[in-house]
Amino acid sequence: MKKIVFAFALTSMLWSCKTVTPTAKEQVIQATINLNEVKNDQVLVTVNAPKVTANEIVYRIPKTVPGTYSEDNYGRYIEDLKAYDKKGNTLEVKKLDENSWTITKANTLTKITYLVNDTFDTEKGTGFGKDDIFSPAGSNINAGENFMINTHCFIGYFDNFMVTPYQLTVNHPANLWGSTSMTDQDNSTTTDYFVTSRYAELVENPIMYSKPDYTTFNVDGMDIQISVYSPTGKYTAESITPEMKTMMTAQKHFLGKINATKKYSVLLYLSSMKEDDAHGFGALEHPTATTVVLPEVMEKDELVKTMMDVVSHEFFHIVTPLTIHSKEIQDFDYNAPKMSEHLWMYEGVTEYFANLFQINQGLIDEADFYNRIAEKIDEASTLNDTMPFTEMSTNVLKQPYKDQYLNVYQKGALIGMCIDIIIREKSNGERGILDLMQKLSNEYGVSKAFNDNELFNKITELTYPEVGDFLKTYVAGSTPIPYEFYLAKIGLTKSNKQVPDAVFIKGKTPYISVNPDTKEIIVIPNMELNEFFTSLGLKGGDVILEINNIAYNYDNIYDMINESDKWTENDIVNVKIKRSGKEQVLKGAIKLPHQQKVHIEVTDASKKQLKDAWLKK
Image (cartoon, rainbow, N blue to C red; front, side, top):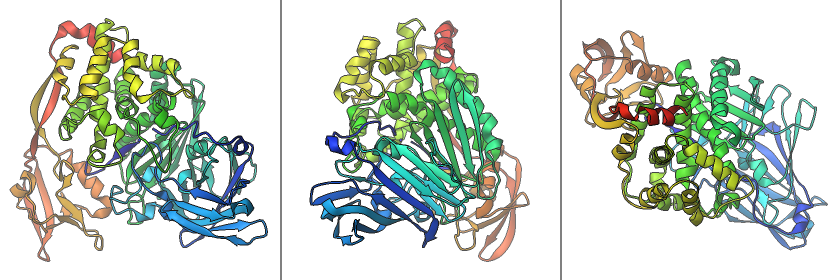
């Protein structure tokens, strides 16, 4: 998973589950989602029950799903769950908790039905509120337009029947087409029929229904499908496919033989950013698919750049945890999860690869790559640098560890970088962390999990004692990583430098907000403003109407922020505002705020051979 906070600022792999009775494997669970009849923004789901001899059985909707690292309680979007015997009589149903229902006289149970609400229209404006579902892991029900079907939002499981095959039927309008990596085994234009080997496989296959807008291409034996839902038609799959093909071709070449996936789908949902639409931007990975949610107002260049960053991250999850994972991942419990201590690898190394492959394959230059590393060092410094990473990972679902999760994308990636540098140095540039992941892939693989407490010893065995020492000291230990020491090995120096900062935001705290009734952009009152505001005489409570004769409001606020990134010191700017109900124009020279940031540059030419091996080999 990767979260993106626009204008202000995880390991989905389950090929096997808990052991159950042999009789469960011989049965089939049939589920049907009816998209033709949407009432009160809800759809009806029917699940045919397995045959059981017990008097009671429990049906569960996931509390959490892998890759999200949060307890989201998807059962709260389920209403009116009813159980029936073969004569159509209702059976007694008791709700155990937010995600579970007990059904009595289960030996006569034939089916259950219930209504599903979508998650997009309940987000609190940012998609990252306390109770918000991360949009790429959520659902959308927009009759006749779009249905985002993350299957865990719609279909649950019966206790002791998680390895039972699932057959999913989706009835849908003829004008809507379902994009997925699953194979539709029904030729009808209004019915899709999918077969999966178990519940975990069903959960790992999202479907997006919308008017057909997709492209397909093949890269080294992998069929890739790009599907787009753009509410205004601003973007099409064809408009972003060239960049996606370039990126995914480079990823395949970078990975080499480590990847064996035959089909991969990218489902891109572009949000209108209206109050009842998605606001949690980013992506969620699956073994053969990625769901992406981004704002439609983004400009083409930024949309493509963001897609390259987030989709490449999710794609690299093919390596870990799809291929390399612990028993906590392989035997994942959707309603009482036990987390692995190796988020540094699942998310951190994945994020490192998502950046390294771009310099390795010539998509970015060295300066860009160094800037990315510097930004991660900066971001990591704002989080708890003494909290052992393994401890945070194991306890990530609870506080205070939960608040440190975002460090998997910062310090986690830097951990991967340091291990890569150590291996490069000890092997005279011949091997790196990708070689380690290939060896781990051969040692374990899709169907063989490792024990959490044995991984460090295995990595040390496959590499060098220095790698083992690093893991014990800086990953399992509380000692902050001395990045200067490791960067110096490849001829780089880390320093601090004053650089221009964003005008309308400091860190993740904005200086502006929007009036939801009028859509007006307002300078937030009662806060200390930066040099841009004070030099022009802008005050808290001022409404920004125009900048340089361009009118702005909520609908194009993203354009205003993008434009501000192009400003240079002492350029003249005109800002039309409304203060106390009266309009006026403020004119003056732009004074940009500055902040101290990490800067990385090459200073030791004698290390060029090792540096080039690190970046290019």
